[in-house]
Length: 282
Image (cartoon, rainbow, N blue to C red; front, side):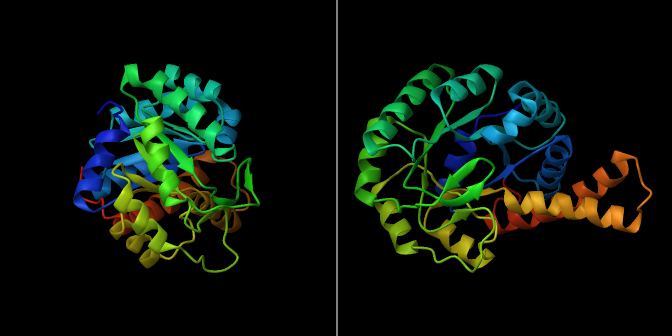
């Protein structure tokens, strides 16, 4: 199946009360592992790369990897630019063939966030590529993304932001954070419910790695249509490799420990797909 846009799968999730799992991938093995999980669960899936991941191997490399794996898959797969940090990077991803774009102007002033987001939306519209943006600031650190001053999404600001930018989906800040939590996160779910009442487009939850499953499910019931997972996938892959090398210290074939890393990622992704409720939705 060819790569598809994320828009239809997210609209279906929004209408039917479930969420799409969006999984950050760092290498070929993680791409294969996520898609294997999606196929086994008969689930649509979004694969994502951040700016720092792109620096590692480049947009064309990740696009080629995901496109090849998606074409061999029997479930819908979208390729998403996660936390695109400039108009230029968003356009590079668009030209390469990414089927979903995020422009993250949340670190800018409100008016500047509107301006850069609207510019990306206008550029992506002729190609029918959906655009996600963020309002408020998701805290924590992931890759080169560092926010020591998180800020919650204001529901009234969200109404204006969506109207003036024309985005397809909105990432909201309700108390989640990127990276590893030091304690259980305290989510402002009532704020999420208020945003859902006022905004009709699909909503996105960032920083879900480490959030208890029941809390994620509650957010989905309150209107989240896409849930991002990154840190937990990295940990799973690394743990698989570490466990193999600990048991086989003389191993030197990357394929051997790569397979174990993939198994760990596939197991985790299948669990997250069930949490999102998108199993058997392909």
